[in-house]
Each structure stands twice: as C-alpha cells, then as structure tokens.
Image (cartoon, rainbow, N blue to C red; front, top):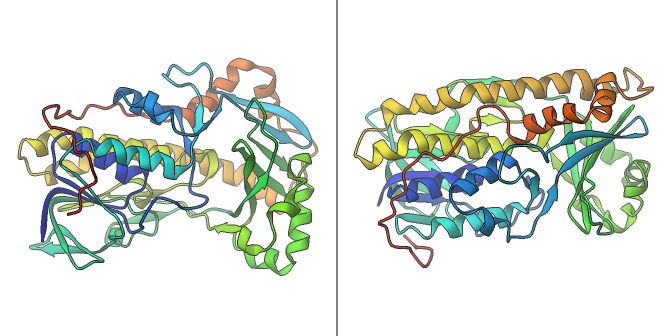
Amino acid sequence: MIDADICIIGGGPAGMVAGLLFARAGLRTVVLEKHADFLRDFRGDTVHPSTLRIFSELGLLDKLLHRPHQRIRQLGARIAGRDMRIADFRYLDVPAPYIALMPQWDFLDFVADAARRYPTFVLRRNCAGEALVEEGGRVRGVRTSDGDEVRARLTVACDGRDSRHRDRLPLTAIGAPMDVFWFRLPKTVRPENDSMGVFDTGLLFVLIDRGDYYQCAFVFPKGGADRIRGEGLAAFRERVRSVGPETARVDEAIASWNDVKLLTVTVDRLERWHRPGLLVIGDAAHAMSPIGGVGINLAVQDAVAAANILAAPMAAGDDPDPLLHKVHDRRIRAVKLTQRIQQLAQDTIIAPLLTGAEPMDGPPLVAKLLDRIGLLRRIPAWIVGVGFRPEHVRSPDNKGAPPAEAEAGM
C-alpha cells in the first residue's frame, strides 16, 4: 500500500500538468500512466497561447520551446477553391502569440522532467488505475494494474473520454456529425507554416504543417468509416489526391489501411465533476470536438484551476471534499461556451458540407469579412488561442523542496 496526498489517473496533458503543480506545492503526488512511454501516434499536438502562458508563469517557457516544434502565427483556409485568411494570432497579448505544434510525447516528457525536480512527485509507468478504492461512501485511492493500492486524500481522474471512473457522474451527450481519418503525407519544408483547412461541397480536409510532413484529417459523416474502406484503398487515395497539390504524394504515404487511423468523434460533458474523494477533469470531464484543436488546452486549464483551488488548502491539511465543486464551478462555463461554438460549427458548417445538402458556390460572407479585415481575424485567434476564462498559476511553490534527480519507483 502506497500513501499519497494526490493520486492522478492518466498521464496525459491534464494529468501531467496537475502532477507538476500539486508536487510543486509540496503535496505527495503519484501519477499513474498505463503505457511505458508517451509515444502514441495522432494525439493532439497543438499547444495554444493560453497553455504557453502557463509555462511562462512557471518560468519554463524558454525550456519548453527548446523542444522540437513549429509555430502557427496565422491560419488560413481554402474555401470553395479560394485561399482565405481566417485567424491571426500575432496580436494576442500573451508571451508567445502563436500555436506551437509539438509532438505530444515531447510535451509530456518535458512536463514529467519539470515535475521530477520535486521530491514529492512520482510517475509510475506501465501502471493503470484499475479500480477506485471506496470506503464509507468515499473514494480512498486506486487499485493499480500491478496489484498495488495507492491510498490518497484525493484521486483525480484524467484518463480520457473513455474513463471508467466517471460512470457514476451525470453525463450530457452532445454528439457530433463526423468522424475523422488521421494520416501523414510527406511535404517539402518551407520557412512559413502553411497549416490550413480545405472546405468544399462534400469535402472537409485539414492539413497541419509539421515541417517535412502534413498531419492530415479527412473528415467524413459519422459512422461512415466502413463504407469508405469498402470502396477500396485506391478510391480513398484518389479522394485525398483531389484535395489539391498538397496531397499529390498520397501514394508514397498510404500503402495500406494500417497507415490510416480512425478517430471516432465524441462530444459530451459531465454535469458534476466530483464525488467524495474523487475529482474528474480534462477529457474525462468533457470530451471536445476536434474543431479548433482546443481539447488539450482546456484540459490544461482544468489542471491549473484544480491546483489553484486545492493545493494550498490541502498543503495546510484541509479536507479537499468541500472544495471540489469549486473546480467544476470555475471551469464549466468555459466548457459550455466552447462546446456551444463547436456545436454551432457542426450544425451550420460541417454537417451540411459533408452531406452536400447545400452546394457551396463560394465562400460564406463571414469568411470573406475575415479575409478582408485584419482586425476581425483577431477574434477567432482569441477564441481558439486563448479561449474563455483562461487560467493563471496561483498555486503555491514549495521552494524549500530540494530537486529530485531521477524518476522515483514507488
């Protein structure tokens, strides 16, 4: 049996940032990560300006940006065959006015390295949180996949939209009209990042510029994966090739369906994020649409809010249970507003586009206005890059703790 103040289930962005902040406050913090490393294909790689500001406040931004990344300062789109400017991040009042495209394993490794400076931090790899330990109507910790029990004053579930630990909390399902095929296509390295979306009748395709390759999202109507696979790989490659000159090298990249990964899009949220001894944050509390790539950044904001509200009282020995509702209350409006915008985009743009119900004979008025008026492009940049109710680091820094040089093996 292992004792801790905080046991965090899941080593994704929310879990690792929460682990860093709680350990920084001097709390004994155990993060359970079911995999041996963070290497997974097609995880979200966008680190938005609001998240970069968090690392600036921690004094870690310069070190983070030493990791491999590309920078998106402006976002464009090809709409009905016309190239248009949509968002401009350069004028945001933040330390890093751009989206950093960084492989998520690099981002998570960086956060783990930063957390290891604190002797109260433990990252257990190859160790899943199998079941909650409950006694007297309260969660008291976690049973792990390797047979241990981690007893904790508070358990935080950050293990994604399929988390089994949120089952007893009320859920609102919102739904999405699309699923996504993810894959990579080779490209020539260019000085400026040229990430963009392509929108036309029956077509929604996203190209994320990762230097020498595009990370591509082929968006199609919900549940249509088997139908597309049934048409054959050659037909799929031809559909990709028709997107434009950027996809001309599709034959080099897609040799079989193994090179194409399915993302089943889910959008939902918990209406309550806690019960005694348990807090749920990140994707486990609110699964977001991939629209805008904001899911990671909302998860990080949840982690910061949780540490801001809970770390100092817990370090003083207080019971966290009476405070847990404050994390939900702090974050839920930002989640609802973001999901409302995503749902509006799904209903008015994505669903009609994918079904071809409304043929696109030119860019819509809003796109024309964004392209023509530079000031307007700051609005989508703010919504995507900063978002609603961005958090600032307010949790304490236990500066007296000596650094820990290596990952502990509790």
